[in-house]
Amino acid sequence: MAARRAPAYNVDATHQVVGLGNALVDALVRMDEREVITRQGLRRGHMNPVDHGRWQEVFHEVQDHHVEIQSGGSCANTIATLGFLGARSILVGQVGDDQMGHLYASRMQEACGEHALLWSRTHNTGKCLSLISEADAERTMLTHLGASIEMGTLGRLPELLPSAGLLHTEGYQLLGEPMKSRFREAVAVANQNQIPISLDVSDPFVVGSCKAEMWELIEEFADIVFLNAEEARALCGVEPEVALGQVAALAETVVVKLGGQGSLISHKGEVVRVGVQPIQAVDTTGAGDAYAAGFLYGYVNGWSARRAGDLASRVAALTVAQVGAVVRDREALGRAISAARLS
Image 1 (cartoon, helix red, strand yellow):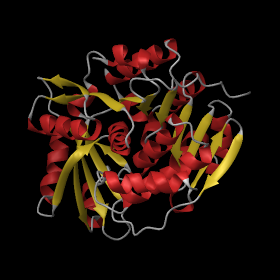
Image 2 (cartoon, one colour; image 1 turned 30 degrees about the vertical axis):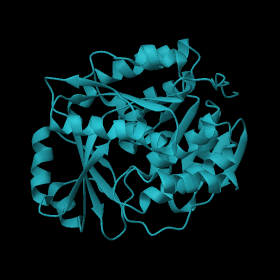
Image 3 (cartoon, rainbow, N blue to C red; image 1 turned 90 degrees about the vertical axis):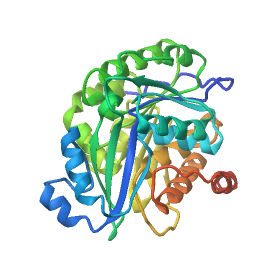
């Protein structure tokens, strides 16, 4: 079976990338997290979904360490990084009408110059506690989705998409209603308007929870698919190199991120391998989101898959070298773009 041909990208798009994602405040703490993980029964290196009470319980256990508060959410990290790279990007999502929600909105405004967030008066802003290992920079996440998954409407998204270049989405939105329905509606609107759709598979936990639905979405709608090695194994049951081909049989562009071994990209039947940029890892939070931002920046600017992958690797390296998922240093990102153009 040949991969479905992606719709043509609109070079005159008002917004080059519109994102629909879970808007979550990130609480980041670097520590020796092993005892906490064992005592709390967490899965190291994974997203652990929790309710508000459970989140507060673990947060109180680690709050004496230095905790940094930032905006977060997988798709939102990608959209914010695209904004700092200079792309015309905007996020659709929902936060609570509370202090964290307004802080979140200001961070997206800083990154993109605007946002399309909805405000909930009945749910608190969602949040993610990332326990970042001092030993190897691996992160273990406790996520309370809060207002982020309680969207009753798509807000401005139906008016934004017809003049957009690309819709970027995340697998996390498949984990529950009503966000799953909003996700489905957004994908349908993009499909009707012949807007390419980018899907980040997000997490092995997501794959384990809705594998059949993930395959259906990839086959019917996704034009660009991002996976890491664990997600590729969970989705396909084979090693990442083989999984790349299986997913590429359905989607025109597939990226499998291999951590320290770089990444593999299949684009229109051609496979390229991209190396990593040498860096001292501080925090792996959001590295995949940053990679997606770099790649999509190249995509919307008409770059080759290899060059887009090179920029993606450079942006991911900048992210890993800091605490937090979004690189806000526009000069450093500009240098990454210049270096990738020469690659």
